[in-house]
Each structure stands twice: as C-alpha cells, then as structure tokens.
Length: 139
Image (tube, rainbow, N blue to C red):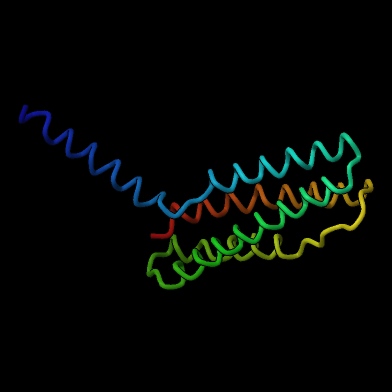
C-alpha cells in the first residue's frame, strides 16, 4: 500500500494540474455552438432559404463575439503574467479577434456571400484553436 501511495498522489496531482490549466478553455462549448450554427447554415444553402441563411449567420456572429470576449480576457491575463509563454499568446489572440471582428454580414445569399461566410467559419475554427492553445499557456 505504501508503495502505491506516491503513484496515487502523483496521478491525483497530475489530474489536478491538468484541470487547472484547461479550466479557462471553452473550446468544446465553442465547437458545439459552431456545429449548431453550421448545421443551420448548411440546411439554408441546400434549401436556398434566405431566412435560415441569415439565422445561421446571426448564430455565427454571436459565437464570434463570445470567442472575442473570451480571447480578450485571456489577453488581459497574459499581460498580467510574468511568464514568456503567456506573453507569446497575445499576438495570436489579437489576430484572431481582429479576423472575427472584421466580418461583414451579407444581406443576400449568393456565391460570393457564401464564400465570405465560409471564410468566416474558417476564421472561427482558427480562433477557437488559438483560444484553446492560449488557455493552456496562460495561468
């Protein structure tokens, strides 16, 4: 029993540190919201439904605002941190926020607007991953 105690203690502390590091990451929440909005977006494209198209874009914009807010919070934490790994996350987080905030929602459904929304979805994917990576490096 005494021989296994250090192993149990190590495992317990290891899982605790993983939980502490990953606590700020909202990757799963963001990915779930993106999948929901993307399903509506795909359905709108198939059915050529402009109302659903606008609904999907609205959902993606709300998600982008949540990601931008979460990233801004991480930027603040990184600026207060003395760790180089934390300060290295400021530029990617800022770039992700800039990409998300530059999106202009289209008013019509055309090939060009679909391409712009597709780029926006890719920007959201990148921003989610940048958020997660920063969450792992900022404590």
